Image 1 (tube, rainbow, N blue to C red):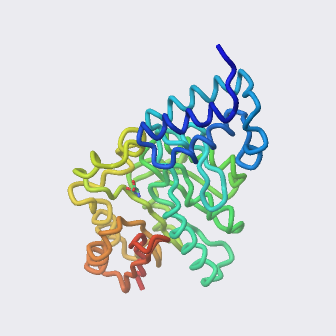
Image 2 (cartoon, rainbow, N blue to C red):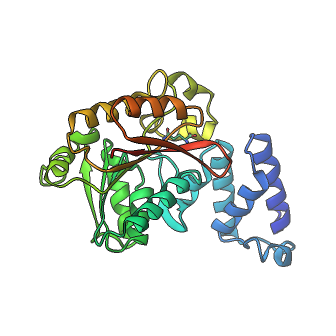
Length: 298
Ligand code: GLN
């Protein structure tokens, strides 16, 4: 086998990823090159005539093949960044999205405004844990409960809490929405009636079932349908949450921050207004699209 230069190996990878339909082929090729032990973006121009070590070349080849199969870049490198923090990701969770940072930032803002000494926050449908864990990181006095119906997602969220050194601030509950139970068998519903949360954050599945097939292969084939499928019109989880709140007299938390699909703003507003919310405001993401419903119950 003739030895190839960094540049040759890189250009070949870009061509292959491009042909496989990867949106940012050059970006991803560079990320994979660095991950394999090759030069990073800064050193690439200096080292492009060098020969890639055998180990790095083998690793790079293997990972480029995986990316050609449209496995998300973050699943290959094992890390996604959210709010400047590293999160481990696998096929068991959604990759944290930059759009969701809008929700996390809004949560930090609201908690700052309330000035609570020890805020108690619930991250419902936590997946990788990116929302709850980043809030724990930026609100060192906060106590955060993370819950999910998927045992594998919850196990990963625990790992991410360790990775981000917030284990003392977080606890976990496994199960369906408010039926989720902590390790001591206490449900979220019971926790709420003992003491309401100050804030509930939730990024539920909200893609209409029929649209799942049309999603990009990274999402459709490599992220869990459980975390995406929001039923026929994508609104099942908002309806269920709103129905729960109707039942819960103290409303469980004064404020909910819910991620929504960009076309769901008015439907979600109506669902929560009908359930008795005092105010529902729709917030936009960085692309200017509706992304978060802020529900105030009083
Ligand atoms: N925003 C995600 C996507 O585009 C969906 C997230 C969700 O259903 N909660 O795939």
